Structures are given as structure tokens and as C-alpha cells.
Image (cartoon, rainbow over all chains, first blue to last red; front, side):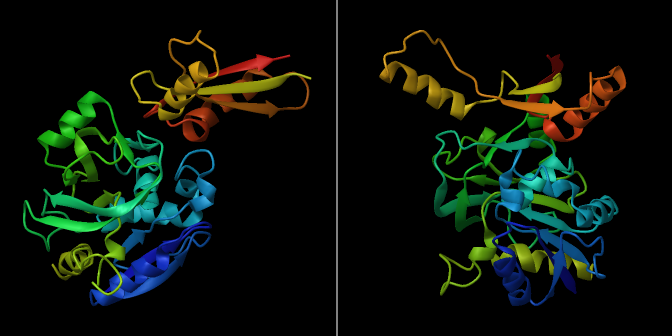
Length: 222
Length: 81
């Protein structure tokens, strides 16, 4: 089971994402933004960071990187694809997920351990959790406020496509406390907090994040 | 020389925390005129000679695809001399 982890110029969390993939029992494969080659991977992660310096809008330029064309095609064909933080922003810019991520409502860059509740456990990236399970993983972003129009929000709610919500105070102004969403098919997931930083209590707040990576292994075995 | 200008603004219903911060800073400096402030982006595009209708149509396409995110933003393309 090979999981590709994309590196754009300005990506920060590719190494932690690769480490999380390996810890879950899969094999991580480095993918370079300039190469339109997925190297035979079964799933792809777009990790966090500040790709292209967040110039123009977060994820706006990365979305047109050569590797993204292949990724978008594969995801439309059902390949599991997870975007974390900046990766979530890229997925929205690529229109693989609805909505957009905008500046945190209080403008501060956030960095803290965040409690989430997992609400949809039928996606490729969340099947290791139980519905209603609470997890604690780091949240660190400047532009993590999930925004969309009212009909889109109603559709996400009605179709159960909100995979995780913030518990407690709204950290960044996201509509309906949205921390992560999925596409209709359940193979593409965008998540603002960082599960790859919480795979081992020695280096993170918990090991709660590991579930996202073991989920995709199960999805690929099916 | 003429240039093509693209103004990009967040849609009215999208929260603009940067504009709000500017709006809050103005009265602290004694400027009391603002009911509200919204912050946007301006792109200035140089072309050879006077912009043609075909070029403007291309800029519209580029604005839709790259310069603005139509999910949260609106844009206006115009020529400035």
C-alpha cells in the first residue's frame, strides 16, 4: 500500500505526513509538485504548510501544479485523497471540495491542541473512528475559517458530509464549527487540524491522529 | 500607458476580518468617518499598446480561473489610462 505525499515549494508538514503513513503500516512515497507522475500510489496526501508562500490565495497557485492534474483525475476516479490544512485549501481551490478557507475571524495565527468530534466515519479517511468519538489533535493555521454559501452549507449538513467539527469555542470562525468535510463519494477529505502531528504521545498531544491514516489502509484493502 | 486593472473583493456576505481590523483602527487614530471597511486586491496588468477586446476577454477568463476565487470573491476588469 503506497501513499503519496506531495511537496510543493513552501510545504512544511510533508515529513510528518510521511512518518504518519509509515506508522500506520503503509509505505509513504514522496511526490514532487513539478512531476506529473503519481508513481503508482494508491492514495495521496496534500500536507500542510504555505505552498507558494500563500501568494494570491492559500492553495490558489499549487492547485495548478503539474502533479495536481494527475491527482485531480485520480481523485475523480475514486482514489483516496486527504488535504490537511494547506492541503484542504488546495482541495477547495481545485473545486474537489466545496467552499473556501478564509482568514481566521480574529486574525491571529492559531497553534494549539484542539478537540474535535468525528461525525462521519464512512469516508476513506475516517473509518477507523466511531461516530461521535472525540479526538485531540493540533490546530495551526492563519486561514482556517471554512466559508460557503447557505445552500452549500445546508447540502453539507443534509448529506452528512461534515466529517469533523470543533468542540467548544469556535477557534477560527468556521461556519457550523466545520473542521473537515468530504466529497459526495467519500474518497476526498479536507481537514484543517493536523492528525499527522498526533500519532504518538511522545511527539504529539495524543495518538488520535493515527486513525486517519489507518482508515485509508482499510479503504485500500477493500 | 494603458493598463488593465482587475479589482477583486470578497463577496459582501463573506466575513472580512482584515477590513474589520482596519475599521477598528481608524477611530483610534481620530478618523471617525468610516461606517465599515472592506479590503480587497488590485491587479495591474500591462500589455503592449491599447488593450484589445480579445485581451480583455482573456483577462476575464484568467480572473475567473486564477486571480479571484468565485466561491468567495467578485471581480471587475477595466482599462485605466
